[in-house]
Length: 257
Picture 1 (cartoon, rainbow, N blue to C red):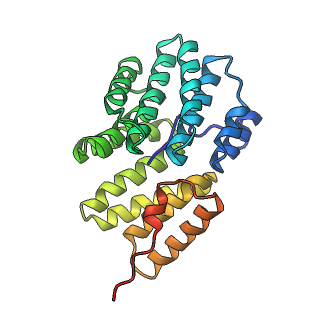
Picture 2 (cartoon, rainbow, N blue to C red; picture 1 turned 90 degrees about the vertical axis):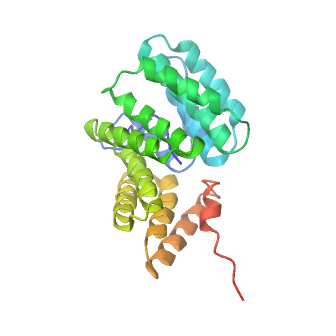
């Protein structure tokens, strides 16, 4: 699973106090509270607010009408190609989340929106890395095309590195590691999952730490695997069962006779 647009904002000393407050709430799964701090009077604020509420849908499977309303506001305020591209990227992510969670099949809308974003966001700019990552998600989870997904994740990883976006790097590390694990490349998978976890712990991205722990557990041997899963369960319970989709990964295997 994955994330959104405002990677890095508010995560370092000296950042704008508003962005720091937004980040702290977002990282603790308080997306609605974070969005309430932003007045959607400019395209940038409206886009950030929409991104927060889209992320809430992905992690909680709730709040779809609020995300749609916020996204429509962002689309209405977007005037430059960059703003329109960012809005299209969020539209694609919302449609992807709806399809992934079985709310409504919007796969065609997701592909079309990300295609519009690709036409508006040129290669090499910071926003392109997030777009590449989301195109990788579509390829992996909706099109079931792991090779295309790997290529998109690698482009996103290179972009996140070039633009010093640690949060996005935590996602690209994790998803590249997931593909490596599926291919039986345990050492590569373990390294990628460990890097993702390290970055999220350093950033204080609490809502993303439990998934990172659970993923690393899948590549580890006992007793370390059980220790990591138990820590993931603790954080998952602390955040009230968010992200919702992590429950399946953390469910202990059924006892056998």
